[in-house]
Image 1: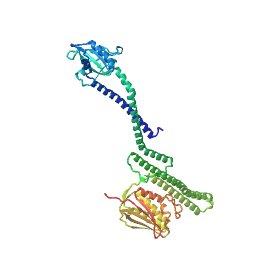
Image 2: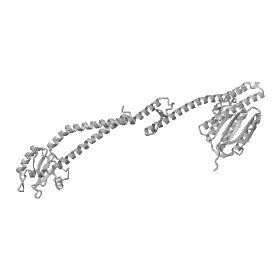
Image 3: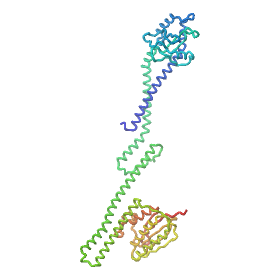
Image 4: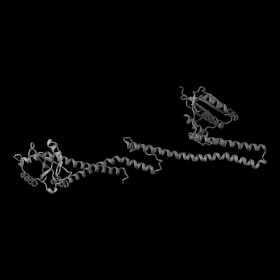
Length: 491
């Protein structure tokens, strides 16, 4: 139960209110005592001098001891809240109205007495209480028999033992009861108000917590809604910001899980396709080599050479496939990064065309280079761009029928240099066009033994260089592959 934020806040509020209430009670208690002492001393500051005058304690310039004893007896009866003491000029107690068994001091300090006599408006001013070794009380004092000829002091303690007992009794009943009820009502009101405020503050946090728990208990693949009640969540405070941030995080997690699932599917397909593509040339090589080994004595020299040529071609095919796999893996892992530099794209295309001219002639094909030879300077990796052009022209030679033309067209689009390679083959089925650049994808008309990695490598290279590659079927027949490279910005 104490684990919830609302419960902890409520308990914290209760303890804080209790501490404040106790502190207020203590401060109020001492403040009231101070105030009561001030009022008491102000009201009775002339009590000592009035007693001297009213009771005729001074006669013919001398203190009347018998009248003083009568005063002690009288005030012990009619006003037991005060205590009267006669002091000499050193503060020694000469006589008093209190019970002798309760007197603890023989002398009181004259310093507060002299300060009060110097300024009667200085209050509360505390003097020694003869009934205690350390307690002090408010008092009234006057010199006797007179201020002009003092022989001692009439020292009146205004809040004597009887007053303390009565005050304790009163505080222990009515005042304490009122304070308790006031404190209780205050705590209840403030506590209820605080609980209501905390509920409003933690309600959204509780909803967010339930949302997080639901997301945690799910497979984390379902994106959370970005709206609440048909309205988009507006960031107004930290809780809203936390909610929006969690929504974004959950969305990213769901997207990443979908990507991981897709990558896992692709990985499984890749393993199956790689296994198939590697098995085919290996099986072919193994078959021809075993045949050659078993039937070598019965085969003619021409047949043996043919078997060795086939095994050699399959080995080259296997080596080429492995190289493409490593190249694609390096590109996907971004281990192989382009080193862009400005270069004339037209010259590079011309060199690549010349390199493939003999292979085209061997297949009774003719490659033509036309278009805008004054292309803008390209800004890309020269070797990678040559790799892409080799792949596109090689594919055009492989898929074009004997006697068909292959055109390499130079141009520009939006100020960026572009190269298109057009073959005269059967074209690409419409259902295969969206997947033509996928790894290991091969349509129905694909060349036998083609692993489908060349176009995937070409697209990855163009993406890394900030360029693009696209394909479309020509109306007159065949396919057209176009690449577009970033142009070089002259300073």
